[in-house]
Image 1 (cartoon, each protein chain N blue to C red):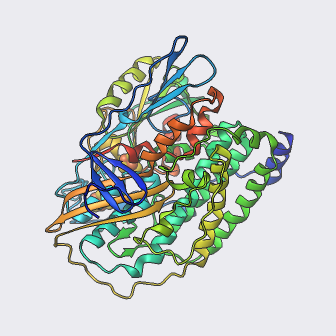
Image 2: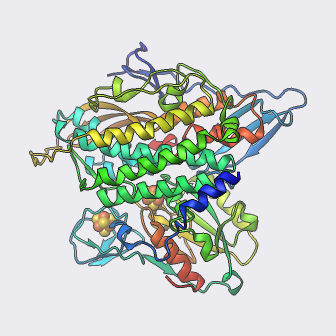
Length: 384
Length: 203
Ligand code: SF4
Ligand code: SF4
């Protein structure tokens, strides 16, 4: 994987002046200027954010509307842009920062970064493969439950919202019991994961049973379904994660990337590309992640190698984080980070949200936003 | 909607009367002991540990105690807020985990509302501004606007190592806080314990 001028594989996203495809990185001359939507007579611009009740993170929405119907939305995610000083750091020190790029998807970020480092320095990492899968699938369960909870909240369904919140907290407690930290900070190392996996299957079974009841109850609610169906519809080949799968694209790095090996995994796809379809894909993935955890055998690492990281090399990794493709490319010189590039799924998911919104009305706004599971923290990172 | 009500009732009371201590995380919690480790954020200086600087990375020899009381109360809460405290969270530059942990105090296990701790949807109706994340240029102005919009008296809560000291990612957005809640991120036990202490409640 290097920067050439051809575009091969599917589009993953952009970091600064690089476009990343699944098989190539392409240098672009400059960040394309966004086309600013011009207002038509009778339209007004409505600003929402960057800090307002109902928004979990700081982000600003520029909404163009003649009244009820939304004609266009532009997302300005730059408010909380963080300059993260990482160049010239050792791998250990860089890892502490990578863990904190998106705390809600910290396991995915840490593991993807470490896989890229291992790739760069030719470090054999098969032994930790299964533990890493379990970690990422636990993170995916919580992330998908969080999105579904936000959908219930947007629909004003406070009882399932609270039931889902309860489950999310239960998953956080499971993570904390296994990894000593509710967000996996400190759990990941070069070719190793620090966790006590005893009793994990038992606790995860409880989550499966409880979620099944909530899921079936939601599916029998005509009002809930009605709020979700034919809302925020989008179908675009440049998409990623559950949003791509909800509109029929079978994109999934668990199957089409060699960075982390999944023995078997069945992709769930929808077809309508609306909020309901994204809800269905995410719900299916809660169950499939639980199944993956149950069926993944944990082997303790036999080699307790101390790895010599004081080397040089270039490497990359791409994994399926809870909301889609996550990509890291690192260049290491004498054990220090010489260059780093990261593309998170929120880049494409924000673009999809902007495409999905026109034609919807204000009351649909939060459904559509929440259904993409966007994290601004991972979108607005400037490595220095 | 009535079917949901009945389903909710059937589940019984899920809120924990006494928080279930067995789920308290190791990190963050009060650390104790001695360590000569070269801490990445200088949280160990001359043998003294600084809970606000610590990012609870677990790399040193200091031992986690599961004691959640890692907060500082710097003044007395104005009397008028003793009955109810409305908090407006403001994300300056977080990784998202601080946001998630603050929200979790309203989850059924903890139900912060029962302690008269509420979320405010606007700084205009807030008693306290809860600041989280590192300093970022554009959010600094937003913070000033939010503080201006709040009625007096107002309280500022510093939340998490990024807000309190800059953590490992940057610098702090503010210098003075009425309450300092440490952690990376602070967990629900610490958050509720800190706010209740400030309100003069027990926990
Ligand atoms: S836990 Fe980490 S941040 Fe805290 S004192 Fe130890 S080394 Fe420093
Ligand atoms: S204090 Fe820690 S958890 Fe909170 S925003 Fe900063 S890095 Fe994230």
